[in-house]
Image (cartoon, rainbow, N blue to C red; front, top):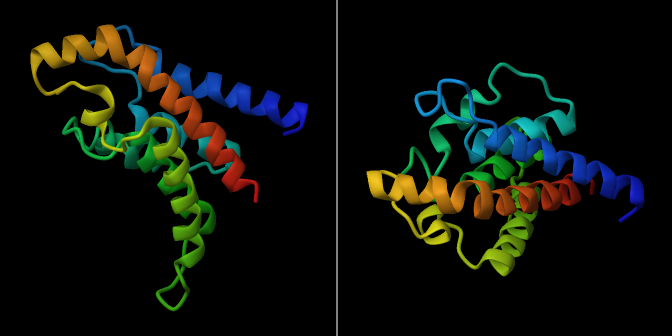
Length: 161
Protein backbone atom coordinates (compact mmCIF):
# COMPACT_ATOMS: atom_id res chain seq x y z
CA UNK A 1 0.00 0.00 0.00
CA UNK A 2 1.40 3.41 -0.96
CA UNK A 3 2.25 5.91 1.75
CA UNK A 4 -0.48 8.29 0.56
CA UNK A 5 -3.08 5.52 0.63
CA UNK A 6 -1.89 4.45 4.10
CA UNK A 7 -2.25 8.04 5.29
CA UNK A 8 -5.77 8.24 3.83
CA UNK A 9 -6.73 4.97 5.52
CA UNK A 10 -5.30 6.25 8.81
CA UNK A 11 -7.41 9.42 8.50
CA UNK A 12 -10.51 7.35 7.75
CA UNK A 13 -9.78 5.15 10.75
CA UNK A 14 -9.49 8.22 12.97
CA UNK A 15 -12.78 9.53 11.55
CA UNK A 16 -14.69 6.28 12.16
CA UNK A 17 -13.42 6.18 15.76
CA UNK A 18 -14.51 9.82 16.30
CA UNK A 19 -18.00 9.06 14.99
CA UNK A 20 -18.17 6.03 17.27
CA UNK A 21 -16.62 7.47 20.43
CA UNK A 22 -17.57 11.17 20.56
CA UNK A 23 -20.34 11.25 23.11
CA UNK A 24 -22.95 14.02 22.76
CA UNK A 25 -23.57 16.39 25.65
CA UNK A 26 -26.80 14.59 26.59
CA UNK A 27 -25.17 11.14 26.87
CA UNK A 28 -26.51 8.53 27.74
CA UNK A 29 -29.87 9.61 26.27
CA UNK A 30 -28.04 10.80 23.19
CA UNK A 31 -25.41 8.36 22.06
CA UNK A 32 -22.44 8.44 19.75
CA UNK A 33 -23.08 6.94 16.34
CA UNK A 34 -23.25 3.16 16.56
CA UNK A 35 -20.86 0.80 14.76
CA UNK A 36 -22.97 0.53 11.62
CA UNK A 37 -23.71 4.27 11.42
CA UNK A 38 -20.03 5.13 11.98
CA UNK A 39 -18.87 2.72 9.29
CA UNK A 40 -21.52 3.96 6.85
CA UNK A 41 -20.75 7.63 7.46
CA UNK A 42 -17.02 7.16 7.02
CA UNK A 43 -17.12 4.93 3.95
CA UNK A 44 -19.93 6.86 2.24
CA UNK A 45 -17.83 10.01 2.61
CA UNK A 46 -14.87 8.09 1.19
CA UNK A 47 -17.00 7.20 -1.85
CA UNK A 48 -18.35 10.74 -2.14
CA UNK A 49 -21.90 9.64 -1.41
CA UNK A 50 -24.08 12.33 0.14
CA UNK A 51 -27.51 11.11 1.16
CA UNK A 52 -29.97 11.89 3.93
CA UNK A 53 -30.36 8.12 4.31
CA UNK A 54 -26.87 7.88 5.81
CA UNK A 55 -26.59 7.29 8.76
CA UNK A 56 -30.36 6.70 9.16
CA UNK A 57 -30.30 3.29 7.47
CA UNK A 58 -27.75 2.07 10.04
CA UNK A 59 -29.46 3.29 13.21
CA UNK A 60 -31.42 0.09 13.90
CA UNK A 61 -28.45 -2.12 13.08
CA UNK A 62 -25.90 -1.15 15.73
CA UNK A 63 -24.78 -3.62 18.41
CA UNK A 64 -25.98 -6.56 16.41
CA UNK A 65 -29.37 -5.18 15.31
CA UNK A 66 -30.91 -2.96 17.97
CA UNK A 67 -28.61 -4.20 20.75
CA UNK A 68 -29.55 -7.87 20.17
CA UNK A 69 -25.99 -9.14 19.69
CA UNK A 70 -26.48 -10.45 16.15
CA UNK A 71 -24.24 -9.56 13.18
CA UNK A 72 -21.61 -6.94 14.07
CA UNK A 73 -22.74 -3.53 12.87
CA UNK A 74 -19.39 -2.78 11.24
CA UNK A 75 -19.92 -5.81 8.99
CA UNK A 76 -23.43 -4.60 8.14
CA UNK A 77 -22.08 -1.15 7.36
CA UNK A 78 -19.43 -2.54 5.03
CA UNK A 79 -22.08 -4.71 3.32
CA UNK A 80 -24.22 -1.63 2.70
CA UNK A 81 -21.32 0.36 1.29
CA UNK A 82 -20.25 -2.49 -0.99
CA UNK A 83 -23.86 -2.56 -2.16
CA UNK A 84 -23.85 1.20 -2.72
CA UNK A 85 -20.82 0.90 -5.00
CA UNK A 86 -21.36 -2.47 -6.67
CA UNK A 87 -25.02 -3.37 -6.06
CA UNK A 88 -27.63 -4.19 -8.66
CA UNK A 89 -30.08 -1.76 -10.21
CA UNK A 90 -32.41 -4.46 -11.50
CA UNK A 91 -33.23 -8.11 -10.78
CA UNK A 92 -31.79 -9.08 -14.17
CA UNK A 93 -28.29 -8.15 -13.00
CA UNK A 94 -26.17 -10.73 -11.22
CA UNK A 95 -25.34 -10.14 -7.55
CA UNK A 96 -22.19 -12.28 -7.85
CA UNK A 97 -19.67 -9.42 -7.73
CA UNK A 98 -21.25 -8.05 -4.54
CA UNK A 99 -21.28 -11.48 -2.92
CA UNK A 100 -17.65 -12.11 -3.88
CA UNK A 101 -16.51 -8.81 -2.38
CA UNK A 102 -18.52 -9.36 0.78
CA UNK A 103 -17.20 -12.91 1.11
CA UNK A 104 -13.67 -11.51 0.85
CA UNK A 105 -14.47 -9.06 3.64
CA UNK A 106 -16.11 -11.69 5.86
CA UNK A 107 -13.23 -14.12 5.40
CA UNK A 108 -10.75 -11.44 6.49
CA UNK A 109 -12.94 -10.38 9.43
CA UNK A 110 -13.30 -13.97 10.68
CA UNK A 111 -9.58 -14.58 10.27
CA UNK A 112 -8.81 -11.55 12.43
CA UNK A 113 -11.65 -11.64 14.99
CA UNK A 114 -12.94 -15.24 14.77
CA UNK A 115 -16.61 -14.37 15.31
CA UNK A 116 -19.06 -12.17 13.39
CA UNK A 117 -21.83 -11.77 15.98
CA UNK A 118 -21.69 -8.82 18.37
CA UNK A 119 -22.45 -10.79 21.52
CA UNK A 120 -19.71 -13.33 20.74
CA UNK A 121 -17.25 -10.56 19.88
CA UNK A 122 -17.98 -8.46 22.97
CA UNK A 123 -18.87 -11.17 25.47
CA UNK A 124 -21.68 -9.03 26.91
CA UNK A 125 -25.44 -8.63 26.61
CA UNK A 126 -25.86 -4.87 26.20
CA UNK A 127 -29.60 -5.12 26.77
CA UNK A 128 -28.98 -5.70 30.49
CA UNK A 129 -27.83 -2.90 32.82
CA UNK A 130 -24.80 -4.95 33.87
CA UNK A 131 -23.90 -5.78 30.28
CA UNK A 132 -24.28 -2.16 29.17
CA UNK A 133 -22.03 -0.99 32.03
CA UNK A 134 -19.36 -3.56 31.16
CA UNK A 135 -19.64 -2.74 27.46
CA UNK A 136 -19.06 0.99 28.06
CA UNK A 137 -16.21 0.39 30.53
CA UNK A 138 -14.37 -2.43 28.77
CA UNK A 139 -15.48 -2.88 25.17
CA UNK A 140 -16.86 0.18 23.35
CA UNK A 141 -13.82 2.47 23.22
CA UNK A 142 -11.33 -0.39 22.96
CA UNK A 143 -12.30 -3.66 21.28
CA UNK A 144 -15.03 -2.23 19.06
CA UNK A 145 -12.81 0.57 17.79
CA UNK A 146 -10.30 -2.04 16.59
CA UNK A 147 -13.06 -3.73 14.58
CA UNK A 148 -14.11 -0.37 13.13
CA UNK A 149 -10.55 0.47 12.08
CA UNK A 150 -10.27 -2.94 10.45
CA UNK A 151 -13.63 -2.43 8.70
CA UNK A 152 -12.46 0.82 7.14
CA UNK A 153 -9.06 -0.49 6.10
CA UNK A 154 -10.34 -3.70 4.52
CA UNK A 155 -13.36 -2.00 2.93
CA UNK A 156 -11.14 0.64 1.30
CA UNK A 157 -9.00 -2.16 -0.11
CA UNK A 158 -12.08 -3.89 -1.55
CA UNK A 159 -13.70 -0.67 -2.78
CA UNK A 160 -10.46 0.33 -4.55
CA UNK A 161 -10.50 -2.73 -6.83
